[in-house]
Amino acid sequence: MNRFCVEAAAGHPITVYGKGGQTRGFLDIRDTVRCIELACLNPAAPGECRVYNQFTEQFSVLELAKMVQSAGRKLGLNVEIDHLPDPRVEAESHYYNAKHSKLVDLGLRPHLLSDSLLDSLVNIAIEYRERIDTSLFMPQVDWRKSTNERRRHTRAVAASAGQGALDAGAFADRGSDD
Image 1 (cartoon, rainbow, N blue to C red):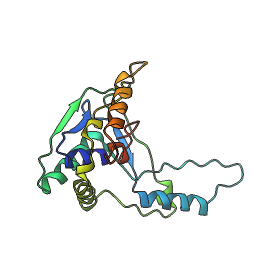
Image 2: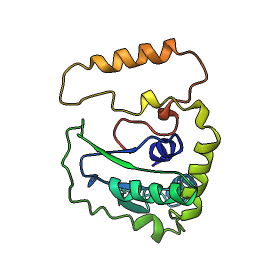
Image 3: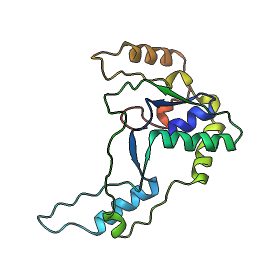
């Protein structure tokens, strides 16, 4: 989502892989800290194994793109969504029905994604948009290939461009989640 906000602020189309049906779990950073605290305050019994899914909401990539598009338009930006061929080896959409009730049962009060949070993220990206290097938006790796010459070339170009450019990766890693 952070990358989408940066793309919108820079006037670049929001880049969605394929149809955008990939579903992701989301968790506010404040809730991350609280989840760790709750797990520490409520240790497992000797021999017991507990698994906590740390997320409070789930969205498809396209749903997130549309939310950022709406937030950007409210701020006067012309935000388009561009569907790119997916460079990852993943299903176009998939069954995602993860449960996340254990931490709520322990007392987590989630901070859910809100319009005000999205507005804030887009406004921060707008404030620093002169630092955004839009050449870093497009996928650098094609997971279907054993080598990726584009990545080495792009890094060299970015390095020769000098200091001060805001890498989209500073907002969101382009690796496994959007």
